[in-house]
Length: 110
Length: 114
Image (cartoon, rainbow over all chains, first blue to last red; front, side, top):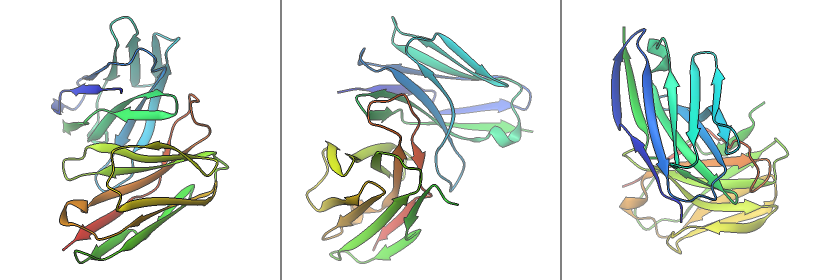
C-alpha cells in the first residue's frame, strides 16, 4: 500500500520567514496530493492541492510543488504569520484512498 | 449549514461499553470515510463507503462496525470499548471515490475510554 513520509515533524519560524514542509510517497499510481491545515481542536481543512499532471500550484502565500519522478511534493508558505501556526498534513490519494503523512506542527513566533 | 456533521462531539465512557458515533453530510457526496486521530495527531483511515458500499476497510478490529443506511450517512459503532480506542474520530466525505477532490471533515468526536 501507499506510504507517505512527512518532514519535519516540528518547525518553528519567525514571523515573516518562509516555511517548507516536504513529503515523499511510495505508490507511483497516486495522482492527487492535498495539503490540510488543522488548528488546535479543529478539523483538518484543505489549503491547497495538486494533481499529478501539474508540477506547481500557487495560491497567494502558499505554493505546492510536485516531482513525480522522485515521488515527492512540498508545501511552501511565504511571509508566515502567527495565524499560520497549526498542524499541516500532506496526503497522497489513489483509487479513492488518501494516505496521510504524520503531520508537521508549525509554530510562527511573532 | 454544516457540511459534515457528527455527533456527539465528546464521548466519555467506561471500558467494555458499546457506543455509536453518527455522521451526516449534506454536500451530495458519494463517498464517506472514518478516520482515527490518536494522541500523536496521526490521521489514519479506518473505513470508506461509496454509495453505501464498503470500499476500504483498513486493519481495524472487528469491534468497529460502520453502517451506511444511505449515502448521506455513515455511522460508526464500537463494541467492547478499550482504553486504546481513546482518540478523536473524524468523519469525512468527498465527491467521488477515485476523483481528484478534497475530503471535507466533520468537527470530530473526542472519545475517551476510562
